[in-house]
Each structure stands twice: as structure tokens, then as C-alpha cells.
Image (cartoon, rainbow, N blue to C red; front, side):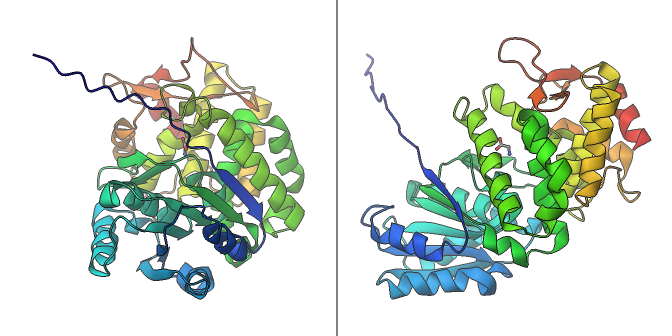
Length: 369
Ligand code: GLY
């Protein structure tokens, strides 16, 4: 005997990304207007640096608006993006009486938004969340698109879920308090977007990258908006990465491996910059990008304050092994995505953006770097 459980769903996970300066009051008025329904209890998840810069203020504004709220603070840095830290936040929420009648407000950079979005997706089998992004990296990539995850000792982002926020706030005013290396790190994801899908953005950065590093408001607003446009053009077509979304992984095969093998001494964007340079160098050998354009990519990364060489302390044979933890690996074979000149991606068949690469081909490039 069979019982058919018919559970067809029509899901509308659309949401707004608000780009602006000092968006704390906008967030509060959205909560009052029912952004997350009738929920009146908010877990504000943040890190040990952002708590005093922005999160406590948001938490107090939530309380002043008549809601209940608590702050949940994790140590800053990529090393907090673990299953253990997720458990710590969940247990702290449970101890404070949080159940299904709450929402999560993530205030911070990519580590916080990735972790808090994952917590929200599994806490009480799922509660709503919003992201208040306070870094360029989170604005360019992590806080938008619905990928949430934690790292494991083997590699980054291996355990997670797709979980779309109810709204994302990109407060470009917060970029002013970022250390220079963190701005550069966010610029790596921005340059990635230029390389893969927006030639104009790339050329704008060639002219104005220093303005972004100086937090010029117009330049920051421009790149925040263009980053969202590139990313969403892809995510709207392939939210769950069945093909096209792999292009957003440009530079991440080598990048994620360098990040892990360096034991997180490099910021995510710094590691991605090395990965972007690696795919451009290999792409040049394979005829996907001209030598001139390859040089433009490396030059722009360097002007953004990013590395394009593998640091001496990174063990290269270990790095080659680590490439196999990449999620694009199929049947034990390495697969890379490549930019096509500047502003487009190589496509290797219908909905096929990954290309099989031998270990020798990529090892040779990494040996030169
Ligand atoms: N960070 C790559 C993606 O969102 O797919």
C-alpha cells in the first residue's frame, strides 16, 4: 500500500536589499511595520568588535521600540564560523527562553551573517532573519544570496543551508570603521563580480579603486549597487547552484584552499584574490583571457591592496591536496570556472561553467605564484 504525501509548494522568497547610510532606524521601522510578521522577540547576533560599534545600538533601539531582545556575541574572525559556535549561540538563545516565536538580527560581516543565517534556518526548525551588513565583504557577497554555512577543519563552508533573509541592510557608513585590509578583502569579491559579469564595474574600479579605499560615498554606493546587480542576476536564475551559480565561485577553488591552509592568516578576500589571479593565469594559458587582460586583473587586485602571490608560509603540496575539498570536484576530478576576458564567464556546454583541470595544470600555476 502506498500513501502519496502531496506537498507541492509555491515559494516566494523575494526580499529587499536596502543600500544607504545609517540604516538602523530603517530597520526598526521595518520591524514595527511587520517585516517579520507579529514577532516581538529578537536575537541580535554579532561579534566582539561590531557589538560596540553598531550592534548594541541596534539592540537598544529594538528594546526602545517595545520589543524584547538579547545580544549574542561571538569572538570576531573566521575561526568563529564553526559548528561549536553555532551550538553556543543556539544554547544561549534556548537558555534565555527563545523558542519559535523569535527572529534573528545578524549585525556584522560575513562570519556573523553566515553563522546567524544558519542558526535561524535550524532554530526551532526555522525562524526568520535579517542581515545588517557592516563590512564590504558582507555587502558584496556573504549577506546576500541566501548561502549560510559554517566551516569545518577540512575546509570552509562545508556545512550549511540555503536560507534567504527577510531583508538585507547594506550600511555603507559602517565601512569607515573597517581596517584597510578588510576593505581590500571586500574589494576582492567586488573585483570578482567585475571579472565575471560586469565589465563596466571592472573599468570603474580601474579608475576609482582608491576612492573606495578612501570610503568615498558615491564610489561605495556605486559598487554596493553593482555588486547586488551582478550577484542577483545569477542567484535569481540558479538559487541552489545547479549550474550557473558556480560562476560566483570564480577564484574560490584556489582561494578557499589557500584560506584553510594558511590557517586563516589571510582574510577571505585576500585568499580569493590569489585564487582570481590563479584562474586568470591558467585561463591565459588555456586561451580564455588575453595576456593584457590577465595583467589588468592582477594589477587591479594589487592596487586594491590584495595579494596575487601565494605567501611563503603556505605549503604548496598541502594546497594542491586541499583543492580536492572544493564542492565543484566531480568524480574526484578538479573543476575550475574561468572568466572570459573581462566581464564574462567561459561556458563549456549547456549550463556548464566548470571545466575539468588536471592537478599538473594547476600545480604548475601555483608553483609560479
Ligand atoms: N559566494 C558565492 C555564492 O553566493 O554563490
